[in-house]
Length: 342
Image 1: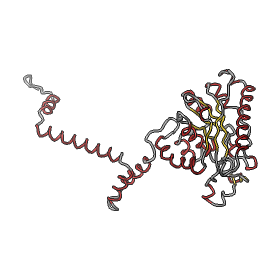
Image 2: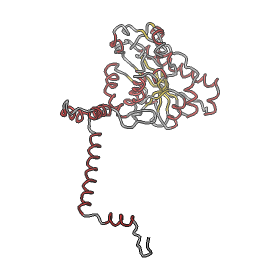
Image 3: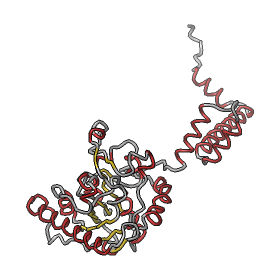
Image 4: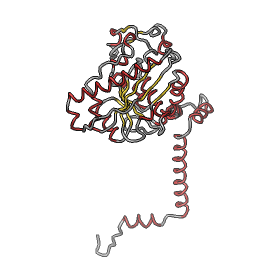
């Protein structure tokens, strides 16, 4: 290279050419940007279209316009027509619960004609632990307790039920319960919700209660090892006894086929006068008359979190709650004149 040669930076030339773009190029670039924004907005609108609009688009396109993309949009519209895009930390879905409300309200008001009393004993705010007897093969009683608190309580509180493992792990029933607000029963979940000021419902009888024979109806089983008492002591939540009458007769268990339930992972397989003899109709619960009574909160007698490690105290308080609910059930049965009309 000669001494008089001049070096011209390539980047500077490129920068000068970039700065010297013509007005036509600038206009074209703006049009492309506008087009990209329009396409993005169209995609967003299609993603949020309702079920009817999406279905109408698929029908209008016909067989020739049918594609995997259109089918995917239709499936998404069907799902989100009754599901929220976000759920809470336990899987609760507000839109799903709202979609299920008409069915549950029909069961509450028309099918079982639930009569709820004593809802004023449920605290209007802050933590609370509703302890109830369990029955009915399927957890209808938990759903009806939720509705009783929501409809009859002055504050219209939301009660979240602690679901047994046998229900929380079943393929079809598990998502139904979690999306409607129920939570898998374990001490960690219960304590976290109570510390957040939630109202919880629990069935200490467990499987022994929900799967009892018809001949043992309304005789409360043992309340396990008193786990609910430990939870109440650790969180300071009041215990509200609750007696449910009417659920024992909706699926009268006359026998059990454990050889069928075992391979399916079920603790029992109930045989009732209608199931499985009538096929799918056998799952339909009988229209008995229900009553749900809430009693005075159980006094924790000034005990604190440190007393949760005292097994004698825990068992004594657990038996006190069980005997209280048994008396409430017996009192309601003494006043009941008919299984069907109350």
